[in-house]
Amino acid sequence: MSLRERLTKCNELALETAENARTRFKIWYDKKARERKFDAGDLVLVLLPTPGKPFHSKYFGPYKVIRQVGPVEYLIATPEKRRTDRICHLNMLKRYIERHSDFTDDTMTAIHTQVVESALDLDLGPSCSPSYDASSNVQTFKTICHQVNAQNLNLF
Image (cartoon, rainbow, N blue to C red; front, side, top):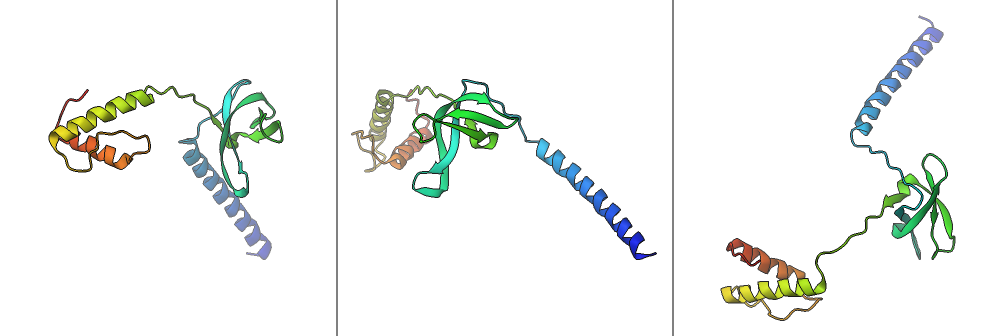
């Protein structure tokens, strides 16, 4: 077998192996890949560099999608930034979901007071305090809730 024939055979083998690998990777990728698409007017979060820290980034927004520029590029309105419009790749965008909280501060205060009073009735120890402060120790609150739940009390 000459050198040219061996090189040709190695080239064919490499192409076949690359095609098999490409097929395996595509099957693996397609298992969890989801097509994402935004329409004009949708609200999105945009992954941008953190001011003062160019190697850190976080999601800012919500910003409005103006239009789709290419298959995976969108024109986004960023009015409070230096550039008021910017083109962003699909991988830098995340759909903004507006959350409506059922728990207001008054609701959380009432729940906390009820749990603390029940904990005091159970004499769960000195970690329980009847006063509520928004900056109070969350871990203590969770501990009280777990202790109360452990005793199968119906508080609500």
